[in-house]
Amino acid sequence: MIVIEPIGQVRNARKDLSDDDWGAVTSRIELLPSFAEDCLLGLEEFSHAEVLFHFDRVQDAAIVRGARHPRGNKSWPLVGIFAQRGKDRPNRLGSTIAEIIGREGRSLLLRGLDAVDGTPVLDIKPVMAEFLPRSALRQPAWSHELMREYWEVPKR
Image 1 (spheres, rainbow, N blue to C red):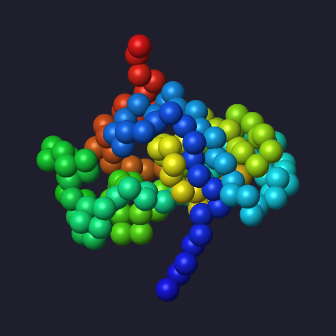
Image 2: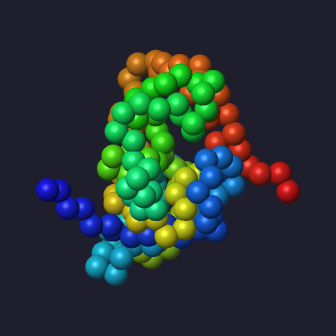
C-alpha cells in the first residue's frame, strides 16, 4: 500500500467541477503548518510549477478502469482512461503546469491551476525546460477539440 499525505490545499473562487473556463482562475496553494516557509524558497524564480493534486470529490462509482468517450461525447473516439486526462481516474491524480504569480510565506500564488477550492495538493515541482518533451508533440484531433475552451476566460 502506498500512503500519500497532502502538503497543502488549493484556495480559489472556483467551486464547480465543470471542465472548461479555467483561464481566469487564480489560485493560492496554502501549505500545511508542518511545512516551513522556506520549503518554497526560490520557487518564485521559476515561471511555472507542476502541481500534483488529488481529485478528492470523485466518487468510487465514477472511477473508470477501461475505455470511455472523453466527457461522454460519442462524437469523440472510445479511448482508454490512460489516453485522456479526465478526473475519473483510478488513483484520482491530477497534474497541471501552472504559471507562478508569486510566493507569500507558505503560500504559492498561481494562474492556470485547474483544481477547485479545497483540493488536496500532493506535490509541487518547478518546471524546467530540460524536463519538457525533447521531441515534437503528437496528439489526435479530438483532443484539440476537447481542449478548445478549457483555458477560456469566461466573458462577463
